[in-house]
Amino acid sequence: MTYDSDILIVGGGLNGPALALPLAQKGFTVTVIDALPEKARKNAAFDGRAYAMALASVRLLDRIGIWSEVVDHAQPMNQIKASDGRAGEGPAPFFLQFDSAEIEEGPMGQMLEDRYLRRAFLEAMGKEKNITQIEDRVTAQEADASGITVTLESGKTLRTRLLVGCDGRESGTAQRAGIKRTGWDYGQTALVCAIAHEKPHHGIAHQFFMPPGPLAILPLPGNVSSIVWSETHANAAAINALPDAEYMEVLRPRFGDFLGEISLKGKRFAYPLKLTVANSFVADRLALIGDAAHGMHPIAGQGLNAGLRDVAALVDVIDHARQRGEDFASALVLARYQEWRRFDTHILALATDATNKLFSNDNPLLRAVRDIGMGAVGAMPGLRRTFLREAAGLTGELPELMR
Image (cartoon, rainbow, N blue to C red; front, side, top):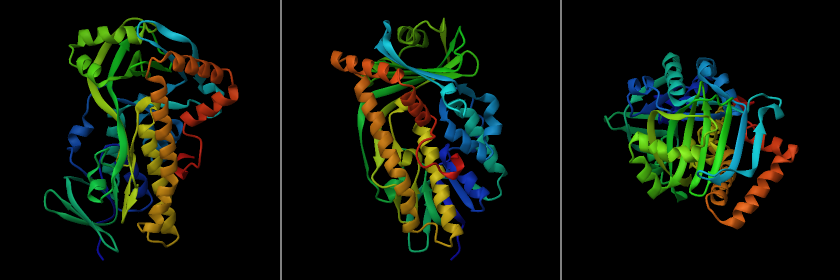
């Protein structure tokens, strides 16, 4: 049987390249299919979109040769402060503070803009002889005993041993395989932008829990922070329709004045929030990773980190299977990947869901309970350290690329 490549990846966002590179470095031939022109992805300007990269994710980027290309654009997260409150009233007296000094490994994570990470991935793939990039759309896929055949919008067909869906929450790869999803709408929309501020942030990330939803203030290099601001769908639609100056007037009482004067920097975005988890992460000769497998609330900033953990686990599973002489795309091998990632993903999804529901309300009893709870956790160094290591992605069974 002739194959065009060992593995075909649908989706060239971030998880797709993050998977393609280590597989190619281990000797697999990889094809990456993406509908968005490479030039548009590579030449993106500042737009304020950024990711909170856990330490384990930074390790993966380092192992595949990406971190050295983006480190000069990264901002270490030295502390995380979480507090409860209402817009214009400031934080509640009880709050949580996590300091990277409490763990031996250094900063718990790094903030990195989307444009730098995306560009580094594209440039690295372009230099890798085992990776073929195709600008096209997949319209059909058919699995059989020895592989899977993919049909592209251009009419071309490709044959591969393993198909991997990295094509987002509305994954066509999953839909064509008959994989259904479970989830629900949170009734919230995330407003995302970047803010320039007068005072330095000192590498401190803030999570401010308000009744309509959380506001995350995440440090970027210089006096700039990335904002992820959750509101009800109706409020978010009204706020997002405002001109920039009025948008900022709504944000200011929520943001506070602890960083001095603030101003909008770059574009504004809005993303409806919902929980969506694939009922299976695998099918015949097929695996799902990232948002194609699981989409969760951004309250813990774990979306991309969870996807990169999928990447590292799948690389481990199929590479070890090949070394043992197994068919790395067989149902038995892919079941190992699903077993590894599905439980962890469900726990994380349930945790983010429960946290959002606990904090996104103005119930006086719940407010008292959560404020006391945050104060209690803050007073226990051992428990704080456990939360820190979880945020850094250092708990559980770590794949080789994240050790």
